Image 1 (cartoon, rainbow, N blue to C red):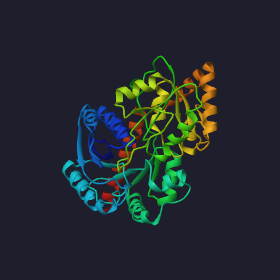
Image 2: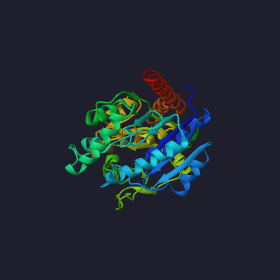
Image 3: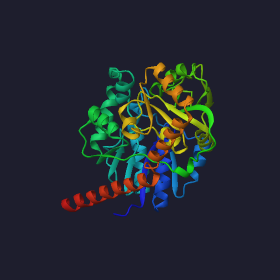
Image 4: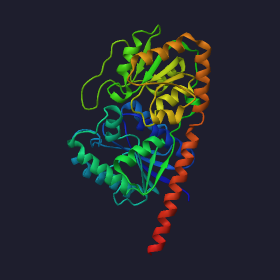
Length: 367
């Protein structure tokens, strides 16, 4: 069934922002108008400029704490009321939530929730144990939201299984890979450097292990991303060349010039940065975890995340063997082409249409 309006939630802190804008751009090209409701810290000037470049995108910001932040749950009722008011005014065909706690609300249209990451799976993979009892309210809210949604989507089978394990069962589940546009990440003449990117303060990105490995490398290791935690504190690592948070153009240039992209992640439900780097012609060195294996098996070098010596050895091997490095880069770029923005947009439009059809059928049966 024809989709004309989608209301989508997002935050401006990490990869969900990039994902939301990419999808909104794809939807706009299909004639779909999007209202993007941003929770948490306000988008910065550069982010607002990125959003304003997408035809038909309406941007709204609600100053409510993100649900994964400490002591955020008491504010979620007010956040839900704000979101419901936006939905009533906008009258969407589908509500697309990129957070969890409001999937069960009485939306004016069918709602899906996308499981990008979560506190309980983060703790399981990064620290090997569940979070403390202070996170029970979070777990209750996430469980209620996910079980109440008409559909739960995840970017990998691994993330969908994690979400089901911690919060299921769900009414329905589906995997939709994230996508990016190859033309936004053109390869450039390569420089002798290793690049990484991500939130430096996030233990899941495992920048610390990369810093240890980098001490023995003949090439510099550049790292792009936010060092300041949204709740306070700044991460720093010796042995790395920090680039700070780069805008889209400078990030694409950094990928284009890097010969190797390293992401020895402990936890990464999809990894948009690896996809962007692969499109730009980087050889990939990735953490050997289920989600990244699912996406890149046969097209990347995998390393045990908590073994800096193994990370250094894998990087050394690619630094010293240019033909193998170029072969690996070609494999990664070919795989990356299968994770296109157009394919992602088409998959979501199919999911939206199925939800609308099912909602109409249910309404007809009860009328």
